[in-house]
Amino acid sequence: MATMAQEFSKGILKENPVFRLLLGMCPVLAVTITAINGFGMGIAATFVLLCSNIVVSLIRNVVPARVRIPAYILVIATFVTVTDLVLNAFLPALHDALGIFIPLIVVNCMIMGRAEGFARKNPLGRSIIDALGMGIGFTLALTILGIVREVLGAGTVFGADITGTAFEPMAVFASPPGAFIALGVLLLIFNVLYKKMGLE
Image (cartoon, rainbow, N blue to C red; front, side, top):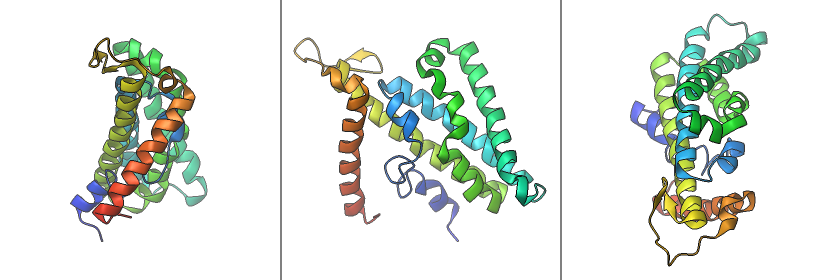
């Protein structure tokens, strides 16, 4: 059985939801126009994942097998609603930028996959560590992709100009095709790094 450290680090490196498992691609491609959007979506998804894993792990022995999927969806939807309301109340600009992709966290296959594939089979402590590792890995991936797209598409990082007037932004990276291009290049880079690290 994996140690707690291995359980935590697998979501960041070996089983990164974006760069290794290619999960949750809808928000990955749609909201990463800027680094702050990617970071915000990652934090929102991490919160939902952590809370869902906690509840699913706690109720795993009392929910009948035949209704476990609807029960998990209800749990996830509850925390997505909380996230949506909190963002709308305290970070309205980010809430507007993320838009429909906040409610769509309910059907994010990474979150349902961790609930079904991990939290329902493991005790609370391991479920929390798994959620934190996967959530941080997801957040890092979205933030990295957001930084790349923002730098190339606008010449800024987290809204701060870093390239000056000499740089001509490439508008394609602020569009949907740019998301696919940037993600493809990052997947290539990370696959090479994973091979060198012996994580393939």
